[in-house]
Length: 364
Image 1: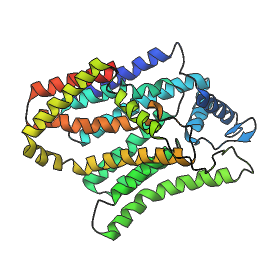
Image 2: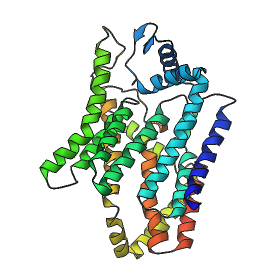
Image 3: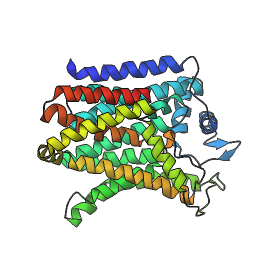
Image 4: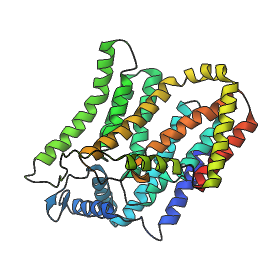
């Protein structure tokens, strides 16, 4: 029965989301209006068009899924968006639980971290008519298969990771940042060049095939909506600083939460230093997974900076854009917390740190 507890928590949290948004519908932004229009035209068999013009400024997966689901179930696009977000939130939570179990986290962390994640500030993207929640779900699915492959080295897991990464790219083009991170991670797997090439091909081939299908379909139209121009306009230092403050705001809202956050950092640092040699032995087990997480986070952030510098200068590095980083950051924090409860068996410190982390996430 204990094995089902985190799934029950996730279901309750996702259901509360549905209860909250149902009377008001999902939040609408200019991007949302375009998704809705694309989905409606697709459901009417007019293709991915707006005012009769083919659109490939946005990837096709989310509007196609919206339009097809709306057509099949014969429900309005707006209602369809609510239920799809509910389903994605469920799958996102379930996949996250599976990832935590692949890390062999203590069951208390497996119960707590998914709920903290679903109720966090970055997951407020689920309240809007955006593709971000679908993107996050597919991203976590890709990461899950990467973890499985790291543990058993079965090629089929890399192929599944590649298929999901291709779908991720077709949900948001920003998926390139994460795909690049996964590719870089594969270079650390072995000293054998032949094995590296075989692994890279297993992962990349499905992505290329999926993208080529979309590219050929888009090229079949005489004109399209792609309006991005290659113009170099370096991202400003101010925008970089604001992005760091955005991520810090996920944990720190004001002076009071800053104090509790610093207390959490100091307590963690003290006990890690006190058990330093023990921690080095412990962390060695997680190094392959932690390395992937860190590389992928850095790769995604650098991709955003490059994209802004050459294509999308007006893109804001806000919570919406940076939200995919948070689930991975929470796993890295979980690795440290897991050490306190499993290896040094200090339930008091673990409980105190968990309470402080939960407070800072909920309060923010």
